[in-house]
Each structure stands twice: as C-alpha cells, then as structure tokens.
Image (cartoon, rainbow, N blue to C red):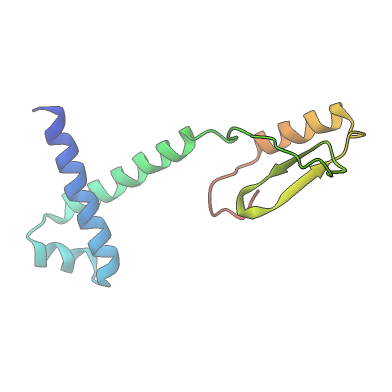
Length: 117
C-alpha cells in the first residue's frame, strides 16, 4: 500500500467528517446514508482529531519578529500579538523583566482561538 493511498484515504475521511458535522445528522444516520461502517467512521473521526491535535502542538509558540520603527517612535520596540494587540517597550525596559515575560508567553498555552495572546 503506497503513501499516496494513505493520503487519499485520509482526505476522504476528512471530507466525510466535515460533511457529517455540517449535516446535523447523527453519526449512525450519516453512515447509513453514505454506506459507511459506524466503527470505521468513529475511528477516523477520533484519529483525525488526534492528528490535528499533534500538528497544532508541533506549531511554534513564537513566530519570527520583524522590527521596523518609525523615526518618531518613542519606544525601543514593539511586539504584535495575535488578534492585533501590540505591546510597546521603551528603551528603559529591564532586560530581565522582558526575558521573564517572554518565557511566560512561551510557557502559556497559545493555541489559536484560545483567547490567549
């Protein structure tokens, strides 16, 4: 069984799970209407959730930062967080405090949509 077959199979089951969620049907009824075995459907639904969870956990908590300050800025640098929030630090910011802040952000659960940074 080749790698392409696995990709095609996963794609097929992802489509079924997506269509089932949109359908408003019970899993059993969706399976009956589409000729699927309910145990197979349940296994794939759970397996896809596990795969997605692992992929999300593998995402880096931080993204590259590009700093470009206007000439008139009164702060040393700024950090733009998800959701458009911006933290600005002036040149007097204590490096030890900034390091502790960065470590706290790194340790926080920053999954998209969690309401965190």
